[in-house]
Image: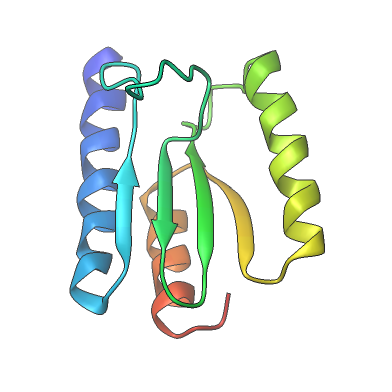
Length: 109
């Protein structure tokens, strides 16, 4: 099962990295690549453009958010409700990833 999640994570990373061709900046984080300042339980991806700041959590269908990530989810969701340019999304599969990418490129998020 570990290989399935790992390969899916790699696919998701590759999909989001394609956004750089459209002027987006993509930052990807995972447990193997902790942030240099030691922030744990952070989102998996941040996507930045002139229009959007998007925080993305990738969780397989069977995975659940830890209590720490639930707290972060609530905080970022609250901020999203106050600012139309800031978004928080949980994606569960490649289809949801591609749908989000389409919305970003078409500026319809």
